[in-house]
Length: 391
Image (cartoon, rainbow, N blue to C red; front, top):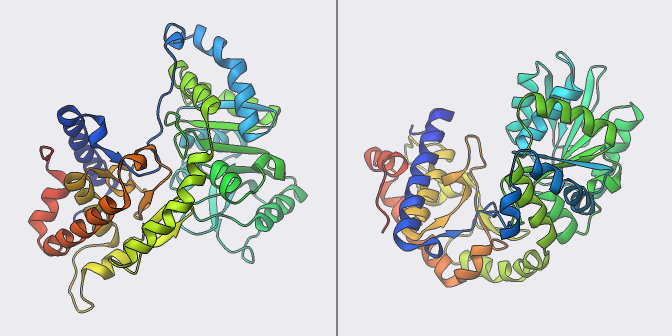
């Protein structure tokens, strides 16, 4: 086994970032193809720079943040956080007491780790469901969380969405929607309403997912709840700082769903080409993906005595794609506990700089290399943890 703890994942991520730093320094940013869908950006204007101060910044950008944030998410008031995970933690700290229960419904298990981890930090009970027939509230339930779109872009049906909100409100329980990418996927691709328009009390989105903002969280909701959550956020330093707020505002102002819509057509063509290499590739709303389980089946014979896990084989594939072909996917650079799915997001800005033929070649070549090293522990460890100069 090569990845035995979250600390190992931190080391893997550091190795990947060191390679990216070397590549960008030697060959420039255009040599890197970030297809993770999480590249984000920081589209501040030159006139913003002198306002990125502790007090002037929040004062200057506050009204624009409220206007643009409410337009994007709905609700009565918005609040910016340094991460979506920070927003979730602040919400649970504000609305859930130790010993009370957080119930989470999502289209497909498992959940993003930030939700159960936040519940655990607060001393709360945590339960999760991905089948509406199993969903139930208890006497201690204090908060219901709905994930609009999973880490692998599985979307919750609108009927289920509205039914959970109705059930929760009938018992007087607030509903937080974790709409990290769903605030755009659900609305742009599936024509679903905004979470607040379906009756949610709170919604949070990631401003770097399928939009060009910084890696941060933006929450919208009812004024009373937002104020309670803001109190916790400021106590523990979870709120976004002025430069991040400026980046969020400019990203919201420049958001254009057309790139997401354009990726829908292109994914069909790429999926068709990749099927000639691997039958296991599936379509996502904005690209293609292969699960760690299917990847493991592709690279090993059924009778092989394996000493690698699904997470490890996906991470190895992602590291080959990065180091040999300069393609960024989530298993290589993501935080500990991220999805193990290799996802190529064609709504990413960098997708414009790499064509389908290049992507197919990278997948084919990386798969062949993975098959060669998968049973060589020394080479696998080197790939995951030892720095390499860019090619």
